[in-house]
Amino acid sequence: MDKTISNILAQEILSKEDIVALLKSKGQDRRLLFKCAHDIKKKFIGNYTYYRGLVEFSNICAKDCYYCGIRKSNNNTHRYQLKDEEILKAAEFAYKEKYGSVVLQAGELFNKKHINRITKLLKKIKSLSNHELGITISLGEQTYETYKTWFDAGAHRFLLRIETSNPELYQKLHPNDSLHSYETRIKALKNLQKAGYQTGTGVMIGLPFQTIEDLADDLLFMKELDIDMCGMGPFIAHADTPLYQYKDELWPIEERFDLSLKMIAILRILMKDINIAAATALQAIDPIGREKAIKIGANIIMPNITPGSYRDDYSLYENKPCTDEEAEDCKTCLEARITISGDEIGYGQWGDSPHFKAKLALSK
Ligand code: SAH
Ligand code: SF4
Image (cartoon, rainbow, N blue to C red; front, side, top):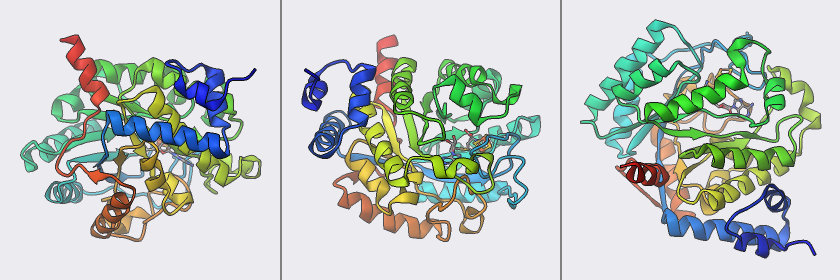
């Protein structure tokens, strides 16, 4: 007889087949999955959600990922680059509002000027906040030396999504050249760990050609890599990208959304004490998508604190929410939303990955 969802949830270790069954669960079974993930979050993380003020400081990118609206070859984007003062002002806002941390994210650049600029900005953010603001960066594939330099300058968490752990699918989503190689991506993730970062990865859910089995493998990949943080969410086709041609072959948007919630819930069960972000892309589909994610296992939210006038231009995918708002509006709106989902906000705290801390303690 096939295992029931209750049997699966009672196991210590989940196989790929078990994960596939959870991803396919419906009705009462799906509710059981979400309840189990909710309880694990409560036990291992507590009812806390931590903020990361997100600064999308530039949409200039040297890469050409087939899914992304700010890819190099998209000539329909208005390119922008925040000035240093604007970035520092956003960081100051996060500090004053007790967000605890910021995330600096942008398109990928590899030149010396860019690398040095980031190093300086990191140091300035640290000093303007009396070394109290935590800094996550999401600045793509760089050399080990660059990762180390930025770590030493004050960044202590890094987000680099693997996008998909299936190398053949990865290839289909990127140009076939040395700038977009799966092997380099894996190496970059390992270098981040080596440089001392709390390392986060993640995938897009509902990509063209992706299967449920791929998603199960993605979760096992994260477990195997022993990541500290994860940010994953639905794939949302962007009209100015090559993958848009498959828009009618994708799983329906509601299904991509539902699978994203299930991925979060299963990851919470697989990796009980990591940080899991409620991705903004969830909100692009459901106005309370991020709150739903918080309820079933996520514990990180990244309020956008990019100055409002630039938000439209950081268009990775369509329907990106809140592009017409200012940071101040986001704050009030979010606080109410999180309290409704039953969590407290860990104001003024870094909200580091407990998983990373536990690993560190073991290695001492
Ligand atoms: N350049 C950096 C950070 C910016 S892109 C990097 O690539 O790591 C941040 C994330 O946006 C990517 O990792 C990708 O997963 C996500 N993204 C890009 N296009 C998307 C789309 N069409 N739908 C959903 N997520 C997308
Ligand atoms: Fe550039 Fe990141 Fe978009 Fe790829 S996903 S094109 S690296 S911004």
